[in-house]
Image 1 (cartoon, one colour):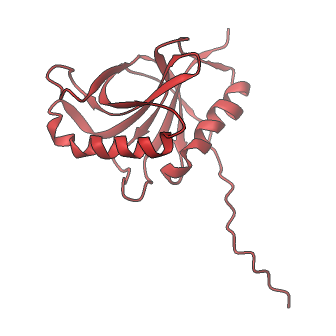
Image 2 (cartoon, rainbow, N blue to C red):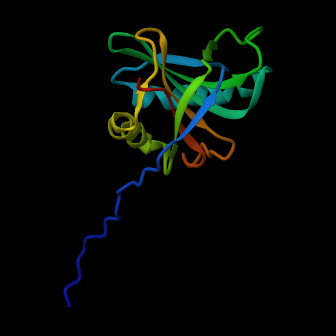
Length: 173
């Protein structure tokens, strides 16, 4: 009998079609950093800092987290780890405000660990969007590129649970 020592699991990810949802506006307060080559190290640090000061954010609505990718100009972006707030007044000085606009979004469920979230983002932009009948609806500068939503059942210790990618879209005319 020939037994293979290949124990690698099938890592093929199945992507579900998104739901289309009209939502917003959302008031988000959070910590932000430019996206650069150090982003894989900076983003988890931002989340640790933010969750460390959860209780200081008296305007916080719930425990849902938002990871925003904001397009500044050209190829410059920043990432913001944030939470939903009911008001921007009297926020801790370290937090920046951002309003996620009211518009149509394609909402993709991310299955698996947050460590593989890039797979879902790549699927949304590279596979789904070009054949969907929708276009990316974002301004050329200083605008929301997309956001991650970490729901009530997301477990920050395991990095898995309720994770969605929200891509602003508009119908192609």
